Amino acid sequence: MNQNRDRPSFDTWIFDLDNTLYRAATRVFDQIDARMKAFIGRELGLSPDQAFALQKKYFHAHGTTLRGLMLNHGTDPEAFLDFVHDIDHSVLEADARLEAAIKALPGRKLIFTNGTATHAARTVERLGVAHLFSDIFDIRAGGYIPKPSREPYDRLIAAHAIEPTRAVMFEDSTANLKPAADMGMTTVWVRHDTTVHRHGDTSHCHHITDDLNAWLEANAPKGD
Image 1 (tube, rainbow, N blue to C red):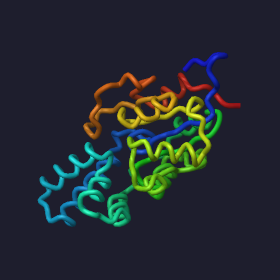
Image 2: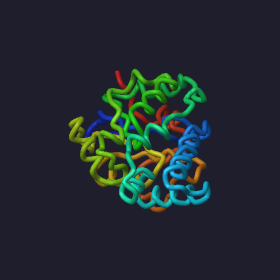
Image 3: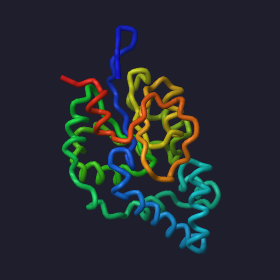
């Protein structure tokens, strides 16, 4: 990532959580996915196949399954979040490379997730990087309105006085990077082999990588 006199240096680094800070191959999000299907089946009296179909329909239509359930069924968001994030985080291991790469970044490091702060805190603790982040901006902080809706981005920027042109955002969803790019952020798509997100136009993805650690080591400016 080159910087010059015409471009300000970056001082804010914004990371998505699931399948971004940890590798999708750990299949942590698969646990959440399965619990979402179980919650929908139990709450709405649907078969596993019906619950799965509705889960994915709402995810693609509303950004999160929860948003669709809230709008269409009046689901209690706290009951949903508590249930779906009750997973085994022990499958994650400390990542010394990730810790070193993030620590070297100049400025603030934030987590911006459609999940909960509790889930995020447990995840980064397991990864050994919790001490590097100054805040976790979660679905509750966003008023239960998920990425890629514009509102949580505006709330994040206001809460942390972020200058978008001095911020870099990392995501595994191209759709979630579009509002960031529109606001002036530099975007990094952390691509992986899953079908959770539909990826269409990627013209707003300034950088694309299959390996977050390698990208940070090779491209990010280093702090003092």
